[in-house]
Amino acid sequence: MHRSATKTITVQYVAVLKEQSNRYIEVVKTEAMTCRDLYQDLQKKYQFSISIAHMRVAVNHEFCSMEKQLEDQDLVIFIPPVCGG
Amino acid sequence: MIKFILSSEPIYPSEMSRLLVNNTVGALVTFEGWVRNYNQGKLVVALEYEVYEILAQKEGEKILQEAQTKFNLCGAVACHRQGRLNVGEIAVWVGATAVHRGAAFAGTRYIINSIKNRLPIWKKEFYNGEQPQWILCSQNHRFFSED
Image: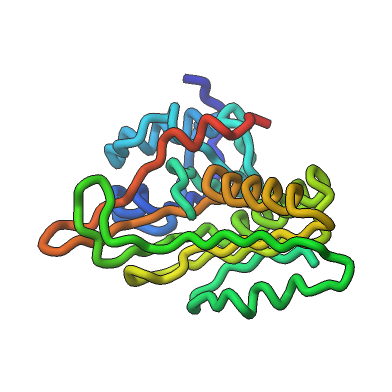
């Protein structure tokens, strides 16, 4: 896993991730470089049941790739499989 | 008229259809998704939709614009509920208008399929005597393109 300088990232949790982490929002200090790295850290921390293969992510309210490089002060929302309609 | 709505209140189809009234239109096709009382062998008593509002609104508008361009629609309106819903309520309403019926049917189908596959909305089912459960439609995420 790639590491870089520590960044401050706000993570908002939705749906099943909110229940499994038992929180709605948190500010994390992280060295994770990409969204993928960050999810893997959080999955370890909270035992998220959904594999990264089934997750999507939005950064600052835009869908983006899991490989997106995180910037200091980003807002990250991991998106479990959707189920509208 | 292109309009995407997220609503915490019941959907009234006649109010939705009225948004699409236009004298140049020859066809209106609508779709309603209802809350049914069973899923995967369990009796469902209620649903809760959690919506990532900012992104769902943006993506919903994008879907309607795509449908308008793709099928040359005159208008497209969609409304998705959020919060708790009882059995029998309308969870989602879609209406598309066009000069002729073919485009209206195709447009409505495209919109409801895209809503189900793309909008950041999650469904929790409530049952009699059992723990509620998030429904994970994992197959949906294969439709997303990585950008």
